[in-house]
Length: 385
Image (tube, rainbow, N blue to C red; front, side, top):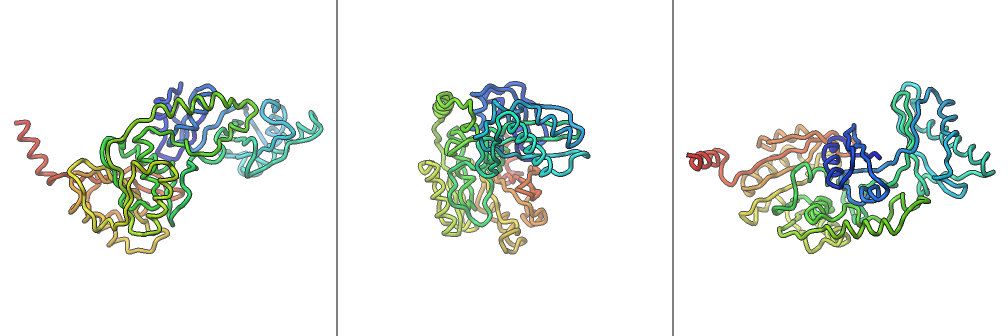
């Protein structure tokens, strides 16, 4: 099978798959291939935090042109996957000199399937682009075509818990990936000081408690397949829930907008995580670290894309607040405004290239020591002496 993901998350996704028990894990570009049985496919959809889709290849062949594509799609025995009463949809990705229009490839594929059923059954299955029974995935790379079943349906970032969003919400898969890149494992306190609709908070709690990422999702595409094993799916779901763990630290969210605080609380309640997460209306720039315990901070400040603010002053104030009020903190944030980073006034210890939707961005880390960095170094030297 193949798990699709966002740019920069391939290594994390591969690690997730190995931890779940996948075999033959191989990293690609925005994808990771792996081996597993039907039960593992169910588990991958349920548990993977950084996967967008899980697709199951069913046919592979070389292809020269659109007529060759039509003939080879027509030649496939579609009866294990479709009936005349099944609705279907086709998603196509092309990277080829011979095939340059994905919609045209989808149309030729649809024609071949419809014509095949007309010949074998006298009637054809209908296309339903929004809510199909079966979603097919066509991928043409140069002269090679892979035909797959999409086992997920809607992108797996649709977790099912987020009912309210703010003006610039962060995608759930992106949030989970950034948290895993930051090293978050639930072993310290956590703060999102600009929490918006609470996505980082919710994903952080699910990671900390080892709760399956998509436990709140209403439906996966494989549930409409002819060979869907409901008893096996329930057994796997129960098994995954039995591996949850307790969390003994604090997860805190701040936002200065009352509407954002209300939405975040609603989403956290919808995810059944209120006992782990507290959310308050506060302006980050007026706050300070509440304890001497280690703190991990991850947040998504405005980039200037949708919110009209003075970027220079805003990012300078982020740096000032971290320096002044948050000793003993590892602070991470994502931004696509690379110019604004210059005004933070701190040197990041890490910069990781990621994408937020179409925006090339950086995930940056600032290490705020309990004393000065020099003081920490001298203290360590004395211990060694």
